[in-house]
Image (tube, rainbow, N blue to C red):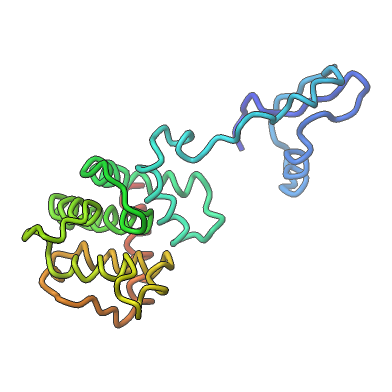
Length: 223
């Protein structure tokens, strides 16, 4: 609980105009909470409350969406769909710099290839210690679709065929965020660069390892 300018408002008629949810939370908490209280609030004030645009995670972290999305995706991976802004912020602290590098490595966007799961995988690999130049190079080759470039590793060709739906067997599955994330982890792994085919034997193990590494990195960053 923190004391902020957002408290409760009581109208001149003695009724509560704002703060119902906060007071309900205090009641559930069961202990006193310090809070700002406004009295004699005009009756027509309530219609103007909470009418602005809700602040996005990007606004709250003070960065652009492309840089924030990887942390949001990884927070959902670890904490579920109801991950809080505080949890996103913790993860952003360990992958934010990598996300910035990835965002700057190519201004081009390509549906599927430059999506949040792919950028999240790239950011996590850098945070894990994979060479950032390698990850950014592969990402740039992918989003620019430089299939004729000899610098594109064989595993990246396989990833592109799957991610763009050119491989019918995996086209439907690859669109699922978690599957795309796992395949992106592989494509940004330099030890798998020479593989001609992308074969995922234990999808769940990749997810489990990713969760464990994210929590480890967050714990290390927290001191």
